[in-house]
Length: 542
Image (cartoon, rainbow, N blue to C red; front, side):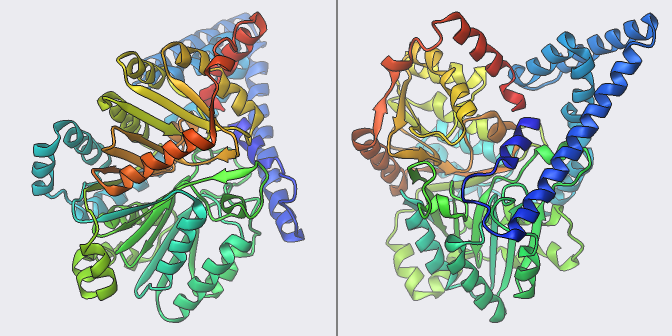
């Protein structure tokens, strides 16, 4: 958590240009320092108790042992439990206060309850069509089982009446998004981890203001820390003055709170419940190569047209209402969940394109850190397990659990062509060092690692066997898989799947270099082995 604060406090060159933005950054820094001081105070109190007497010292040591045993008994990934166990047993004066303030999932009980209350009211609005599942099972039992898992544990159905279009660059996705926003008639929902009040957002903001003036309901939702470098404290007021409803996810406050480590990393736009967008890109200049801090920025996105957009709408409404909602009208969900296909048929322009497009199967889904079901990771694991010929991943970070490591290696051992693309120019040097520590074990098992040489790849996607693919916000790292609110789209037998495969093939041919030979012995020295072992041990806490 402290590392996460450091990451956000770090000022990138050229980002803070205005006094108001500096003030916003100072507020964030003050909150971070205040939280750090509170943690140090807990450590100090524990230390003072520890040295009071031998009896107290033994009692606290015994309590630390019980705490370690309790952590070990939890039903979660061993890699997540191990850092806390080691920290508590090796350094109880530091580990115990940190765990009691930051490590207990029960500390988010209040927020979890609010989400559960919303889910009980909203999820029944998108039931699974049994005929779609029956049709899918006749086509592929393994894919049907994957979709069944997502519906049963994340509660998002699969659709066969919707179209999905893939964009291999964020600039193309943004242009399509602008065109769709201009057609909005009833409502616009936008949820992003980071929004920058700069060139990339200028055209969007203009359209949102125009639509709000026309009576379209416009809602904007963003993560406080994710946007801290990019907007000032008056941004929300200016949006609301323009008629745009605006809410901030999990504002950073100078009070110790375990929930502050859970960020909203989703990227969603919904227009009239008919058209939806998602992908890896935020609404900030670097995502569209307007500024280039790390070479060419590779990002991707998808546009969904049809009833599958309902899943994106529900994802937005769930978090919108769970965070500071007092408006009773917000609970009238059905008005935001129209029969998209029926409306499309009434619009001649949309109708022609929709009728002539391939449909396939589309299942947008979301993941939450407030339950014990790690949907994002499990979707990836299921796709890996069902791969027969190949599976390709692109991710900005590669910090994976032993389960993921073993699944990738096992797929390669059984003859599947497993490839992973990571950035050629990293945005975080320590994270890249940690990423490298996973190379030897993956390479020994036959996984091929590629670097994206033009710059930084921020896309989060995979494709397998020319039939199934995912695109979304979920990185192959602990923060995405265990700590953040995320979303993605699984697609089967769509043209978009082939478009994603074509994009990978193009990158392998023109933009990527296989680094297997270079990194297979990266841990051969004693110092490297020790350093990487320590980094990987505490990776789940970074």
